[in-house]
Length: 358
View 1: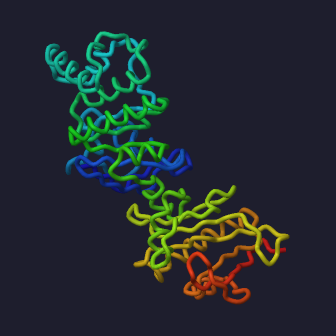
View 2: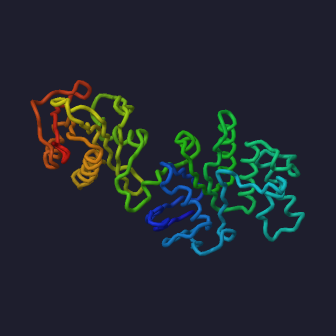
View 3: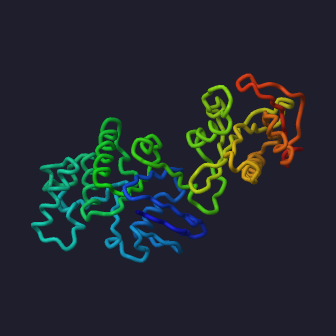
């Protein structure tokens, strides 16, 4: 089991990791996703001991390894660019981290690992002449050489296309499952994460201070379905506006679970088409947290963002059951009730004038 508690690190004046906490069970594969610059690779480097956090702890199977050197942590790491030693052969690269073994033992172990990753017969090959896929396999074999309890994969299949990517992903998944290896996998490819991981975690949900974060359409669909489609005719929880230029989805995470979401779409206010406006759509809060202030927090953050982007109006088609929430948060009700054809529910137009109003 890997346990990360309150890891914090700054680069100059920028907070890169802010109180990050994460637990990964023995044998579990967790994929970390999220935009560049949110600290995914930095987190792996801190876990591996390549970088030091200013505070926080890393433990493996109950042992605090925070202050141990990299080679004593029981952690393997596959870098995005493989980082093979060009002056060493395939076998020598794999054997590099085999401490305390005789030459004979190293040879046997290297041969075992080469067979494991499907590279039999390449032990003496120059790494500068092998293919990209073979180099990835060598990097994986090297990371497994010391029998790590935890394996960290930083974009391990980047640069590989189509069939080769998919085949290596399947092979790697099978290999790690057979070894019951605990894995933290970083990727920008959510489809890769869905195929590979037992659990997908958005890195932004792990930061202590980043309560309201931008999320993807895929991230918020389960919450939309649970909250906004419950008891209504079966529908796809996607909106056509999800694909509109400028559409932004905001969410709030708690314990790595999305508990509130909303979508903000540049869209004219129906009663005044001459000034910039943003439509709020798909406002949803987990049922057990409705009335707790989470929705108001998310709404406030979205309004501030819309104002910063120059919107003069923020408007929504609010369900009758949500009118009190909107009026309590500074929205006015306009016009008569209308019935939404898709849900059969009564709605009202609500609007808030921003500080940008001339």
